[in-house]
Length: 451
Ligand SMILES: Cc1cc2nc3c(=O)[nH]c(=O)nc-3n(C[C@H](O)[C@H](O)[C@H](O)COP(=O)(O)O)c2cc1C
Image 1: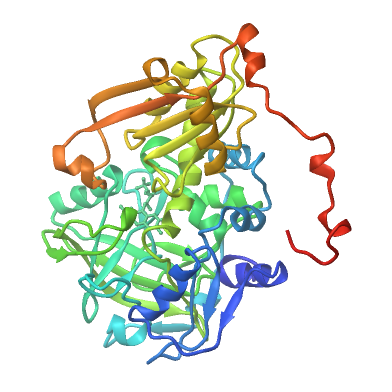
Image 2: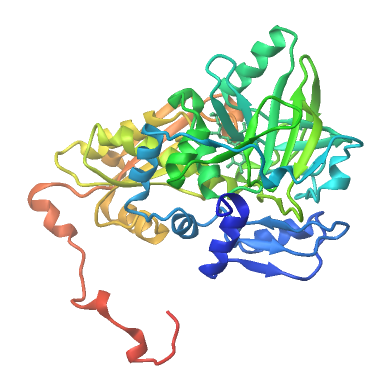
């Protein structure tokens, strides 16, 4: 169905007036990324003129929560439950004999950088990078489709280095490597919100077919076609599909690359992808994602599901925010309806245990807006006594993607219990309110003024 994948998403973004078109020529080297970053990677932008190419580039699609929710027909209150429902109830896909992504098939003289407007983002980056490619591999035992975003460094001609951090996907490659066989992969560009979100679910934790989770999220079967040179299926309405193999026993140096938290990641040897084919729609649009921020939100939305379900077992949790400024993994804020003394500390234990990546957590009451830095700071300033409300756990396991952890190999964990006491003392923490404030219409006083 035409509404699936990128073109459907762009139509929808146009309808809700969230798509910015850039008709001035931009250089894919630094300039395109700089424009995306100017808007904090929160504004979907279609760059219609890209220097040296006839192919437009789209970026900034996935960096803004509100747009994400609108595009997935959900909202702040309901999103966790919508995502949980889809993970728990994957739905069938639909297989088509042909689809638009097969309109053009290139199998010879593949020079990735010549064919595709692949951007270079930071001054110290080793090369240009495909940052938004969703890689699909098939689980050799179950036949389930595992999708994930992995950055791809352009090495030369048809060869890229691939950074695979998760254990399961790594093991799929290593199993094949032990048999001296290549792992077949397809890299999908030009997708929509449902497809990206489904890719961020951990295969290791849930063991699901991520195409089927996508079908559940979009409320209709994801439509697939067969690849041309590998035994995999890909969405029929994607813009571009890059097919190839990860050959055994082959590594190339990858990095440096400006990535998580805006630091340059480690330079290390990584497996490569040798491209055998590029399929694309007529007039394809190349998709990119600015590193450092845009990727966090999609990944963080799933981390929030995991944090919420962990806390739900322990306390009456209202909502959770795995913050963008904390890389959507290091910082968690949770609001709870405190029932018993000790709920705040118990929630700290739960949050720190929900993922090894969580480093600092703040627990607040339900009257605090966990999406407002001001409100969180207000709660810490007025509800915390350091001698009683801080929990510090030295030397825990942390994320290898964080420099202060890498320095020591372990990381300290911190919890701040910023909840109000129960009982008589609670009254002292009641917020002063102006009756009718929420209903005030500022236009009545200042006609035409935007809030
Ligand atoms: C835009 C974006 C870029 C990402 N880049 C990488 C990457 O380069 N390497 C990696 O291992 N994971 C990366 N991730 C995270 C994985 O895609 C994510 O953890 C996924 O759930 C892994 O799937 P798996 O746990 O089933 O293997 C990225 C995520 C996003 C949204």
